[in-house]
Image 1 (cartoon, one colour):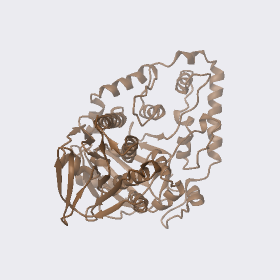
Image 2 (cartoon, rainbow, N blue to C red):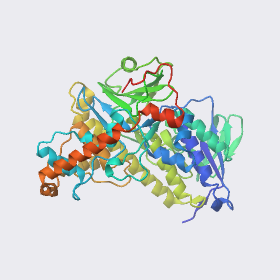
Image 3 (cartoon, rainbow, N blue to C red):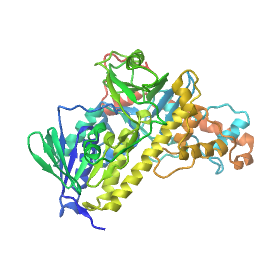
Image 4 (cartoon, one colour):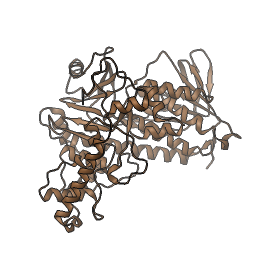
Length: 515
């Protein structure tokens, strides 16, 4: 199959997606293997257009992304006014007043080759009422608002946890822009007047200045608009509103109130859910809701009534359709970020999907060329990745036990996608969590959701029955004691930030508040 050679790449749209892509591509094509076939990269964005810019909560893969660029955690934390994130606290999801944490880490460790979850379920059968959360170092650190770096070579499975960042997305985009421009990426501040197409895809862009910008390969980072992938190339869109009923969001930034917590908070309301993301210099807040269940004015009032700290601007509203482009890569154009699709930020996956798409591009461009096989593979993996995340988000709604509002009753009654139905059935029948290809979230993430939402298995692995009861209970107690001792020795989250990242408390902050 004939390969299409790339000599020029044009990225349309800046923001987080555009500049992350520019940074990764310019580093990739600057390695010695490409010196004989240099690739020029140009990014076109308009300072007249704003970006959505609310994706402030991440998952641990972001740290590996910028580490490959040669940036360190302290550098990024300082540049983006970031705080550390050990997981997400879900309030009011199971029932009003309930709370649980989905951590970046493991639950317990196996006993005599019996997986932990089956040991835990056997102990419950024996009358042990200890919550699953007691066996997670990540959960306990988050609950007590403590933070330390994971041990580079943990001596115990109980010591394994990971972490991510809450950061100012616009500052991170600036950091990526500075990195890119220092390595030769050309930036053009301009509006695009026309997109010219031909049989091969995008032929050129006509700027309002009259300049015609040609390229071999185009990256669409124009957000929901999808200027290239949809308006020009008509990729088509797969709508997932039959499972995800929320279709609007309102966002506002607010003054700091209290010491920064090491977790994102996602609080369910009657018509959706509200996020709270602590940064060093402000908080990010937003309400994702179903417009069929609440008016925009009511949603705004609900959100503002649950914001701690003075709002810094008028709330901004976004409308969206949950789903994805039918093809993320069409001819000579690939879509990243919101141009590729949208899933509500319940599990902080928006930036992660940018990262994984960029990774696939880098793997494709082992030489500066591609063919239809590369396009088909990229589209298939993107499809599966979006669907796996979609199903994980659907689980939050499907397994709720609330009966106080139509959204939650409707969510509980929905018919599930087949893969999710099969996955839930495997857990309910035998406490098994099968791992599907291209899943971002591992078994322990699913366990956190199942347990937090009250999904109970009917049976566990028979090998757990062979464990002597007193020995099993003693070993579980040792696990809890180990976690308790470890947490006790860890500094407060804000102390870690102060010691290693130059953090200084804002005047409004009150030490120890907001835990």
